[in-house]
Picture 1 (cartoon, rainbow over the protein chains, first blue to last red):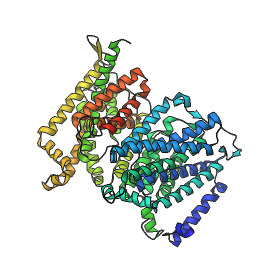
Picture 2: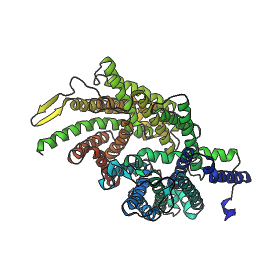
Picture 3: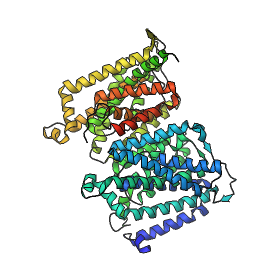
Picture 4: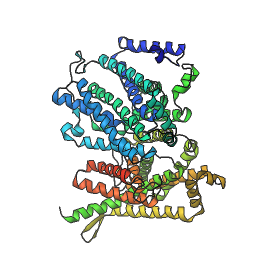
Length: 334
Length: 290
């Protein structure tokens, strides 16, 4: 098991991994609540990025509407909790099937009718936007006024109902990121993973080799949607409020895909590196702008957009392949 | 409700839809030739809208008269954008192009936000509240002028592609990239020209839309999506399709706003998109290729 995990990782890479993991585990002891909340957001995007990566990075299907899986799962678990006091650990058993069902509908319609490439991406946006406006008018779950979870006192530590302080949520999302990383690693080196790779590189050739491309593209969507769902449940219980205008919004979908694209599509460490870099940049920028006294709405985003532009132009493969090669962290192409 | 209300709303929806169609025409031209999906299309339109607003507020220029100058400004901007940045991305994967244009879109939205603030702005022309009565129909003057101008610009564009050497050369690039290079066409320059033309279309559409609706920086992403919906509904690469799609979506939105709720109107546009993608992926007038 341990040997399998570190297959292809150099000694230096293993040591670095151990240090980072130890730091991550000890972080809540050293940082204040604000910084901890930044770490939580970072890990959240590392998680969702990893889940999205299964569809795009592994199987080559560009989804620009992953917010729909986050949102549906968040609303499912939140409604069960608010209305029936059902624990999120039970709620997630409903949230994942809901997200997977949604993925099945989108995937089936798209792949059955040969909707591919740009068209597929726009179809996913359309579904997410449809859900956003639909939930805005869905008054049973609060409509555009939002859905609120009862806020527990700060000191409380109730893991079963996910009511508690930031440390609890930090460790929860950390465990989720590690778990999803291991799952993705296993998927990448499984039979399904190699089929996905073949489809990503050349779908027609894959079909010619006898791969049932419809089936394996469907599996990619279902796995990705199901993996995204826990992030939605996490978000609902961490924020304690849900607004369709936020959770289903296209900017949510775009934020989900930024980390893996900047870190490196189709790589395992890409989403994590990308999320860390993005949040670090966002925070440095916030601090920097505060220091020079600029407080104009939009200034942060402009700088962000420029940085994104530079990364896309200069490092189109993403940062991870470059870092891994530069510092000899892996023995072969990651 | 009396039948005239439906008729009035339908006519106003069709006229707005023509402007939508012109906007989508720009997207269709760019995708049809350059094969790059312009995810900053609506954002480019908001630039044109704010240009029109500034020209009106400071110098009192009527947006309808500013249509050509603003379209020229957008043409130059689009030409430069394609020539300097996007041409390098032609051979890169789709998600890379997408991210490039998303970055550009983010920059546009937020620079506009910094300059103009988040509040809605509008233009009050002398004819803002005029209307024409045709039998039982009452037609807003603004929408009539905007719709007519949209048709004129679209006809001009179609004529350019059909009857000029340059237009033919651009169509050659769209049909066969390698072939166009073989016969010695400067593909990069023609691509830049095409992107400029697409930008000019959306610039003209934005200038006209200013007299119909209020402008906020947040309008950009919404109109980018709307342009996609229209282009796919009408049929990618088809110019008449884009206009027809625009009219269909404008009509749908108007009727949905009347029957259900104006805030939910784009939900119906997306529903149409999903139906079209599933049952007629080539669009209303597009030809089936795959």
